[in-house]
Image (cartoon, rainbow, N blue to C red; front, side):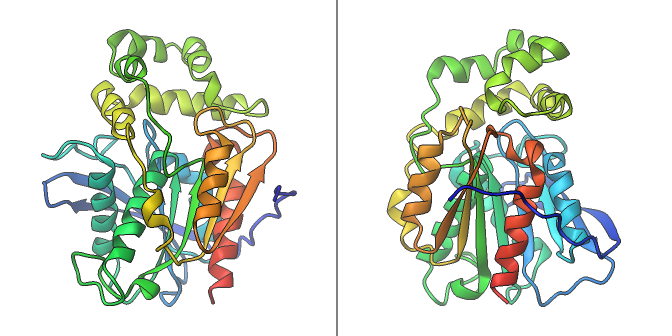
Length: 305
């Protein structure tokens, strides 16, 4: 279906933020921010937002503030090698990033509290890998396999501008992501915005395009290259049918990075998913229309009550 105008979420709560750190089993330190309403409801799912390649937890600022203002407790974190998070001893891979997500969730919640995971682009790849692993652990998965019963642990998925397969970054693009010349160009505002022009839709504001440029430019070249290389050969389709949690798949009709057809296939393969198309929007949905992510996440939580 195509998304109509999105109503604003009720801003009924004052929001406070606190910073935390989680340490992974390979000694990466992950920087975390928790956005809480003044009177948090711990019986409701924790909402965890996972950013994509060459971004940071700040890409979710507007979405997190809207959700927390509506009464949700929201977690954002920098994926390994990004912003304030360190790399760790293991190489970046989809499976490693899924383990990092599990570490963040385990650090901030008890086994009894359900979570809603929201993943954008490469963050969606990690979210899918984590959810698939959780499903594979069976109805009584242990601490390492998912920390609690599957049906209770994962309350829902919101998958934004993402896919389960078909994201084979060409070798020359991976090389470019790690090049000093590309990094230098990204630091020049007008040129950096031009180079990243395909990541936005025609309606993207200058503020959104410049925020994306700054995020890309501040990401270490080796991290960019490793992330974009990590999706080569990725194919998570075999495990999608086991993810029984409700899901919302959001795609911009002008997405040139992860084509909408891949998001459509993902929604069709997940047993309890709906597809939301956002007209005229490109790949950077969290910057272009953060209210869409907040709205559908809010609605998913309400539907599960």
